[in-house]
Structures are given as structure tokens and as C-alpha cells.
Image 1 (cartoon, helix red, strand yellow):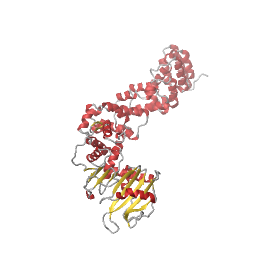
Image 2 (cartoon, rainbow, N blue to C red):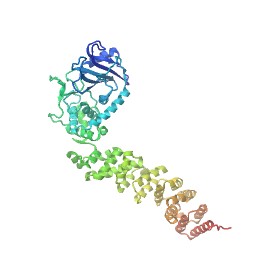
Image 3 (cartoon, rainbow, N blue to C red):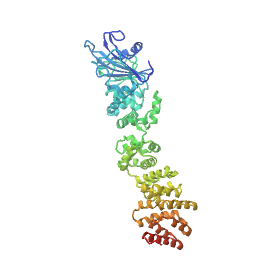
Image 4 (tube, rainbow, N blue to C red):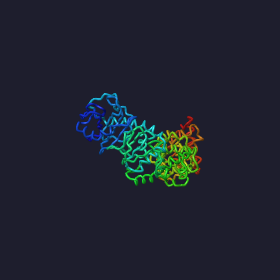
Length: 566
């Protein structure tokens, strides 16, 4: 067959006086295949187009990488006699088992009253895949309503003999739903037939379903026949598969991704290795976050409760919290804080810390952001975890990074001395002059950042050269008057503490130098804030310096009232 992955050929089988192959009876009456290819495919398909009475059946097969999907129905023949067949066959390399199930309700299947020409057009695989995805989405909505016990029984039965041919007799649920659950839970593709008249023919797929209406032969067969839910030997995988099926029922196929086998399940040893990898113990899946969340709602089995209390999960908690998506992490935290047991709450600080670290380095996902108002953050835990983040551990490198970090602190309502310590550490690798320039250039637009940065300045150690650079930045930045005015508008007394911090940082021991203070006073703008002059005056421990400041203040007062020296 053509190796074109985008091509899907189709063939329609029904009763006719003369098929495309020249024979009377059920045979191909329309096809997109070349005549020689049609003859070859008919040798494989002819026995498979017959269906059991009842709803249409599906057959999915794999012939050396070429996939075949048959939609078939038991119909009357041209003379009205029961027991004929109508089958629509799709043949293509890009089809898979998920596509096959998704196409079970496709509206493109040939019906009894449909008129079809002899020559059919091949279908485009992409278009067919899109139709299959839509059908699969709808199918999964029904699958999750299946009993976890039934799904677990089906999965355990298939896993008991990997690769072995299995016949399910009189299934208690629609076969397409059971097969969909298998594919989503294990990720293992398989071939199947959902409504066969028997299970003794050639080219049969791995899993065959026989309904009670099939009237199938009871003759010996090489296949294993089972009835789901019926009595038989205890399957050691039953606890494992029930746990998988329960998770699937609760959370859908997306929740199964992390638990899928790492390699194909070709042998019993492969199955055993998979079960050991994804369980803490039989029946308890290795998902700490799921256990914690469900424990808040009283949904754990007794075995799961024992595992959670025993400490078996402790060594896995840190890594699993780190791998949990934002929304799931925040959702679990909400549950734990609202209804968590003592065991669940023991992990609360780890989850809060992980959420804090993520917020410090990147925006949270939208589902997580919506849950933030419902969370209570313990400040001690937060300060400890934030101290490990990049801004604190290695220092900020830009004003934008500093604003983002302070925004994080205010989100958590952290404004106490420990918060100031974090800001101090985050800016400690920066020159004071750099900080002052940042504040002058952009600070007025970010008052929360300015407030914390200014309050964190005490304790910075500056050399003589660094103080000189800081003074230049301070003076060329108009003594940060605009920033202080934004923080303490129209209140000179309220501005004094801020200028006190700035003066102490910028001048330090130089406040006693008449030369330096004299130069500073000459460089200050004519409208220098009174609060700044007040701080310079009260901080100076040198009478000569205080006199210089007083003289400058007097000159500005007189000049401001139109009484300048003439």
C-alpha cells in the first residue's frame, strides 16, 4: 500500500449481484483502492465484515503498520432476509486505536439506504483525525461514568496476560467505553473487535467482544474467554488497576499521563515493574498531592490512610510538590488549609514555600492566581523560602526585577523587619549610588518598592568613594524630593524619617565635614525640601556644620518670601 501518511483509503462491503471482484453476495461494491490492491485486501477482510445482530460493531486491526478500521452492521439482504452485512472499511498508516474509538460515532459511515458510486475518493488523514478527536472527547464523558470496579477488572484481565488473545463474553458495558478506559489508563495500543459473531476466525484482533445475541460457537478456541465481574482466580493486579480506574474516574485521562508505563507492556515482568514504579504499595498510587487533597474530603481508602500516616510518602513529598502544576498545587493547598488532617497539614509549609518560590521567579498560571485570595500564607515559612530565591540568594540585577520581588512581598502582605531584611539582601550587591539613581528615575511610579528600599537602607556599608558616588546620585537626583513627596505628600514632618534614612546612608561620618556639607548646600536646588534641611541640621554634631545649615535655611526662607539680599 502507498506509504502516504495523509491518505486513508475506503471500501464499502454489502450484498450485490456482482461485486467489484465479480462475485455474487457480500463483497466490495465501492472502493478508492486500485483493483489489484482491493483483491489483496479482500483476502484479509472478507471474513471480518460480518457483524453480530444488534448495534454496529467496530474492528481495528494492524497489518504490518497499515491500520484497518471496519464499521459494520448486521442487515437484511436485497430480498429482506436477515443475516447479511454492511461494512465500511478505512485503511491508512496514520490511524491508531484512539482514532478508531473516536470514529465510532462518525457521521461519515455508509448507511443502509446510502447510494454509493463504484469509485470512492480517498480521505485526508488530518480531516479524519479531527473528527476522531471530537468523537473521543464525547466518548470520554461517558467512560468516566463507568464503575471503577468494572474498569479495573477489565484492565487487570488484559494485564494478566500481556499480548494474549482475549475474548470478553457478554460485556456489562459498551465495549468502546471499556477500550477507551484501557487506552487512557495504560497508553497501550491494541487491536479489537466490539461486536463479533464469533471468535474462531482468522485475522481476529487481540480483544474480541461477543454479545449474548451473537450465538457464538462453543467449540474449543485458543483464545481466553472471560466474563467481567465473574468468579475466577484472584488477580494480584486487581488493587493496582482499581486504584488506576478510580483516579481515571475522578480526574480523567489528563491525570493518567504521569502514571503511564515507561515502556511497552510486553511481558508480565514489564507489568510488575510498572506497578512497582507508580505505587507506594498495592492499591496506593504514588501521588502525594492527590493523597493529601483527597484526605481533606475523606476520600481515602483505609490502605491509603495508613500509607499517608506511616511516613512512607515523606521522601517523595519534596520532589512531587516541585513537579505539581501551579493550579493543582494551589488547589491542594486550599483543600488542606480548609479541611486538612494533621497529617496533611504537616506538608502545608512545603507547598506554601514552593508556591512562593514560583511566584518569585515567574507569573503563576491563571488557575493558581484565582486561588491566591483563598490561601493563608505563614510569614515564617514564606520568609524562609523566599530567602532561597534568586533575588535574595544572588541579588537583583535590574529595577524591574526589584519591583517584581517587592510586588511578591506585598502580595503576601510581608512588611515587617524580616521583609526589610529580604530587600536588604536582594539589593546588597548593588552600589548605593545605583539604587538612588533607580529611585530617582523610576521610583515615583512604584511607591511600594520605594518605601521598602528606603526603609532597608540603614546598615549598608559604604567606603569613602562609595559615599561620594552616592552623594552625587543623591544631588543630581534632586535629593529624591519627587519620590519622598509621592510617599509623604504635603507633610514635611512625615518626610523627616525618610530623609533621615537617606542622609544617614549618603553622608554617614561625613556629616561632620564643613567642606563636604558646604559643597552639598551649594548644590541643593533653591527649593530644597525643608525636611531635608531639618535632618541635616539635627544630625550634624559639629556646631560649624549646624551653622552652615542654619544659614542656608535662612537664605532659602528669605528668598522664598522675596527678601533676598540686594
